[in-house]
Image 1 (cartoon, rainbow, N blue to C red):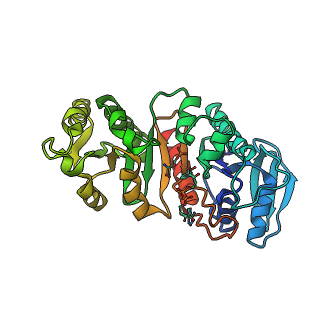
Image 2: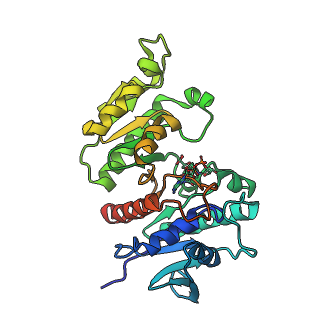
Image 3: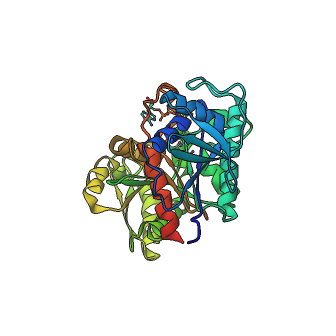
Length: 336
Ligand SMILES: NC(=O)c1ccc[n+]([C@@H]2O[C@H](COP(=O)([O-])OP(=O)(O)OC[C@H]3O[C@@H](n4cnc5c(N)ncnc54)[C@H](O)[C@@H]3O)[C@@H](O)[C@H]2O)c1
Ligand SMILES: N[C@H](C(=O)O)[C@H](O)COP(=O)(O)O
């Protein structure tokens, strides 16, 4: 039997909860029996330190293959590619420094390159500090934009998914006041096209049912509260329908999610970050997954941040990480 190609987990911010949720998931046996074994892109000593949070001794030993080290904790082993050697070790919960930001970016760069050259089937990202990445000189608001650039893709879609709701975003990380100017018929249409295409390719949906939110209260109420619906969103939906996509709307965002979670739609296409992520995290904070659609590689992520307020306590939930790993493994098999 050929050995299955690995899935890479990037360790994320070494001062955040990333290292400890990776170790927590390992100790719970959540990586056992995966169709693609995980390799962590990170720092073995930081992971060893995370094991101590759970009162566990961890031994580091050399390995070969994509990983160069293994962390042994009890009967379980985690393969690691060493991409940083922090000394002194970062303190969980402390604000990350620029050197930590550089390491976070290097984990992502290495994982992306290994997915692109075919040595790994996909990547799962633990949370980064966007400010630390910026302090290290990386001019990207997040993984989504960095990966799009490295993969040479103009347009990707941030989708967050749970068992009851999926949301896909037309705009992502920008000030709320900039959202109306960032919206265009083309951006809305391309979000619909990519969401339709990748839900079909990776999620086994033959004709995904997409609902589209309005931007304004009461869907603009006949242009009384704004005209983006008539000017941009409706034409984009008509364009998508003409291209064979099952897109409907625009619907008032205040009621749409109520019907979406009853199973009427496979995904809700939203105009801006919090319009999408508030309902998603309300329902799925613990087990939601952030997935980048439109990339030539598989990339999923936890749906939460670095949680510095609880880092180092061992209390952070690893459920979103486990869901992200399972989804990436399924996508890798489904999309191949
Ligand atoms: N995927 C990513 O890389 C990602 C996603 C979101 C935010 N961030 C970054 O994280 C940093 C902090 O952002 P924030 O404060 O808005 O969001 P956050 O998700 O880090 O924290 C919000 C709240 O949720 C709690 N929380 C987060 N993860 C948890 C978990 N696994 N278990 C239990 N509780 C958890 C935190 O303790 C905090 O109270 C920022 O730098 C932001 O850019 C990164
Ligand atoms: N918007 C996401 C969230 O709030 O969970 C997160 O910041 C994603 O960013 P990435 O582009 O780094 O996946």
